[in-house]
Length: 271
Image (cartoon, rainbow, N blue to C red; front, side, top):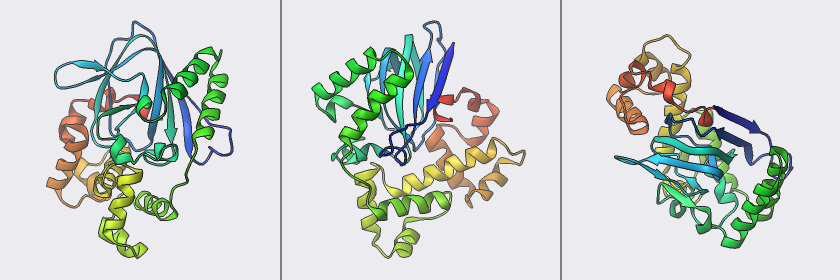
């Protein structure tokens, strides 16, 4: 049995920064693996029961119980063990963890997964986890998380960075760094520097991710040929389309849809 429930935050200081707090539960007899495709809105989470495991080349390894994962670049095959409960903070901006720490995101996301013990103090995380475990229902756990997040809120995103992100999303990834630099009258180097600090990947990869996610949204509801959908979503070169799709899914578009791989993609990142 699996349950995924999404809640909105209520604290006014967080409403425009956090899209939702998600409670993901599985019973111990849930043994199937699922796939997480790259996504730009996941933040960080707390596994309070069981273990979350991610597949490497040959086997599954346990992830940090309290941590963040690099979900921007490549897919992950995930399993859980035991009676499982994970609470994840989903952010309205890519890798919005930069709102709560001064550590640059390209440092945080050097590895596939980063423990929150490497970002906050051991005492802060231990106290937070204790409070989450003591809270008797979802609503009380959310209040605990909100209080912690407000206490760690240290910086707002620079207006230029927010404007660039909004522009990329408004064009659904049909843009490039040179166009962004010209539009905002800044250097390409400035844009790369902002993305290193606040996202953790370069802007070219982020633009490609948004275009990939846009293609998936259209292809799931369209009966058109895949190449026609690709053209509609900004892919003008078939070889580049296949290359980008494979980079984010490990399969060609034809393999992905013919093998019904989309059915294995977890609802956790598709709320």
